[in-house]
Image 1 (cartoon, rainbow, N blue to C red):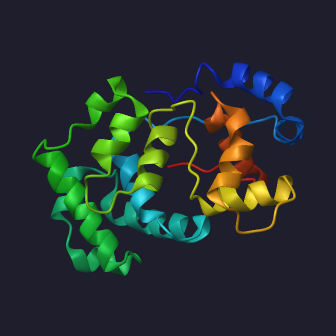
Image 2 (image 1 turned 90 degrees about the vertical axis):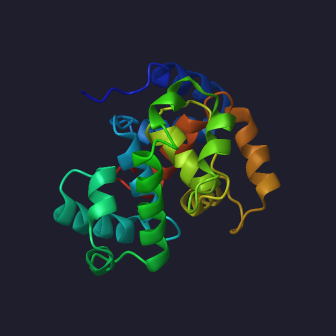
Length: 208
């Protein structure tokens, strides 16, 4: 299935440009590209787990090595693969545990990812964060990069915080209340603002 950018994308950019001159300038610097949500829910969750608490570059390297030994990521493949092989690609013991646990829950149908399409953001976060190794950040990456939800604000994302500090002339690190104060005016299109702020730090668009 071909990936498509969310139908709200251009409308959101126009509205955000009127609300926030800083975002308007960022948009003008990155006219090409957009968020293209993934069609593979399990892959998005796995890639988000791999990316927890490490740099985008490090996560990308580990992910490429993982794909090399597994081919197309699936719950069956992750469940069956030897832990020593996973360790060799650079995954920590904890992340291996998280990936194995997620695979187990998918295969047993304790978690049915397809049903999330019809659920609210909060309900999805509530259910996903019951899984070992999936916190708010990982659930937010799922909402953005798989479901393409328009109004997701990952307040604890280090890259986002750095971008806000850079463009809004704030001192790093930033208090959550300050982030929320700045980002409140981006509603109901926070996802679009976040994606472009990430993009302003890295020419290569972030994806999960």
